[in-house]
Structure formats: structure tokens, C-alpha cells
Length: 412
Image 1 (cartoon, rainbow, N blue to C red):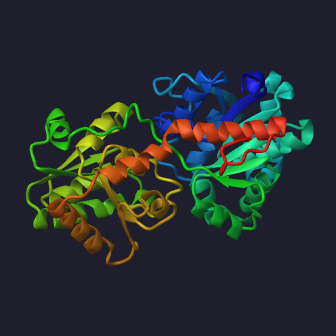
Image 2 (image 1 turned 45 degrees about the vertical axis):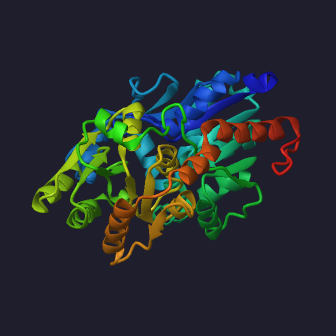
Image 3 (image 1 turned 60 degrees about the vertical axis):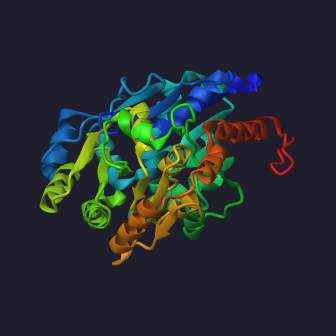
């Protein structure tokens, strides 16, 4: 692959910022690609409000707090390179009245700010709109090929974004040389919106086995000062789509059925204060860690007996395979790609009026009866980032060198 290493760049609509602390599912890919001789640099568009734009947003949209410019968080990673552009009056008007022209304008900025792009043969994109659509424009202009990875809400929340964005998203998918969906469910939703699926492949996100691995639960609990026999937790952003406000009631019902248990919530977000209030009202002691480094997430996950995932939607939840790699059971909702990730080794429930009762009762049963860790560890071994990157590099080679890969026979 080294002979094509100077022909590929990476571009993302997702990036670490003051709002989004990190993107490990992209960084893990990049770090492995760097070891294999490919560039570890990834570009992203970085909108910066002028004073006028900030004032307009405040007056028109009544924002109590002006959104922080999403400049790269250098503490999260050094791989990310912003392409800055001004959000001024002209751009606001373009965005309001002509999203197509706005994206043409952004394509010109990318072409200007990445001079070597005319010599690049392939771009691997993360996120469908506007990133994917912008590169469909560049493909028509300069012939650059692109692979597009679809992660979640760029597809499963399309119905909320209006007909124009849906149409441009489908254009981005159809014009891609390959679309990588992180779950079959995500691909199915895209096809419901009119995507034909002919250039698609499903490659789930992976996990880092150097961080997430099994260690005796008792020893793991001692390391993080957990005194109870069992630990039940959640890992993720504390936002509405994660359905985190159900957690205190689920924890309360578990506590009623199994006394010797502690609870932990790892992550941060808009519902942090509300969760603390609900926990106090229900007299449930929950440890909140806030946002912490992946290595510390792994320490807690090794100590957990059950991980809860009550989300309203997910593309492919990386935390499931991370939990399995730590020998931790997973119970969640049946939304999005959650059922695919959990498979037959954990348990999912319909997210309806009975979800809280069903979930808490099953967690209590698992805590009482235990579970076999060996199948979880064996399943996780199939989803390392090494294996994900292997498959993605085969796609690069197929596009750039025309060599077809047969996954069943594992040969070119």
C-alpha cells in the first residue's frame, strides 16, 4: 500500500472541538493508517462567526449563549487541520436561500486551502452532509474520487433536515466510489430515502484492544475504589438522543432488587444537572465522572458488570464491543444499530412504555445469576480497529488499482 500513500487524504464533518472533546473512532483509524505508511492528517471545515453573524444569530434565533466556534481541540489530538472560513452576512444569506451555492462556495475554499488536492487521487470522508456533497462537487470539477463513511445521525436523522438536504445527501452517496455504512440498519434507512445501495459496504466501527481488555472484575473494582459487589454504568454524551433521563429510574428499580450495587455515568452534556437532580429525588447515589480520557473509561468499563445503552438512536455504538472486550454484559434499546452491535450475547428491548421495567428487571437478573464472559471476549476480537482498517485499505486498493477483493476467500 505504500505506493498509494501519497494519493490519499482524509476529510471529516466530525472533529474534536470545545464542544466535541474527541473523535476516537476517527483517531484510531488515523493512528493505524500512519503506521502503515498513509497520511495521518485529517482536514475539516471550521466556521468562524464574524461579530455581525454572532449578533444576527443572537437576535434572530434568541440564543442565550452564542455557540462557541468549533476550533480544533489540540488537547484531544494533533492529527486535525482546520480549513477556516468566515460566517459573514453573505454566507448567512447563501445558507438561507441557496444551500447548493453555499456548498459550491465551500468547495472553492477547500480547493484553495489544500493546493495539493488536484494531485490527490482519493479522499476518505466522514459524514454525509455537507462534507460528502461538497466533494461530489469537487469530483465533477477535478475528477477526485472519494470514499464516504456514514456514522449515524447523518443518515438516521435525515428526515429532520428537509427535502433539499436529503436530496444533496443522496447525491453525495450515489456519487461516492464507495459508501461505508457502520451498520446494516443505517444502510437500510439510506435506501428508504432513495439511495440505491449499489456502491455500499457495511464495516462497523471497531475498538482499541490495547485500551479495552479483560481483567478480573474484583481487581478492577478495587482499582477504581468501588466497594460494592456489582457495578452498573452508562458511557456516552448526556444528551436527549442517548435517552439518559431514563437512567435514574432504571437504577432505582435495580437498587430495589439488588442492594449491593453501585452506579456510574461517564460522559457530559446538557442533561448533567437534570440527571443529578433526578438522582437526588430518587435517593440514588450515582457517580458522575464527566468527560474522561479513553484509558480511564476502559478502567471503569473493566469494573462494570452491566453497561446500559437506552439510546433513541445510534449508528453503530462503539461502546458495545468495548464493553464486550472488557467482559461486560450490555443491555440496551432496539434502536438503530444497537441490536446489530449487541447481537445475541446481550439483551435489547423495545423502547416503549415498558422499557424501564424490562431493562431494570433484566439487569437485576444478570446481577443475580451472572453470565459467561468468554463469548463476549471472543466476539469482541472480531471488531478491532486493525480489522476495520484492513478492510478500508482493501477498498482504497480496489478503487485506485482496480484489484477486486474477495472477502470470503481473503485473497485479491
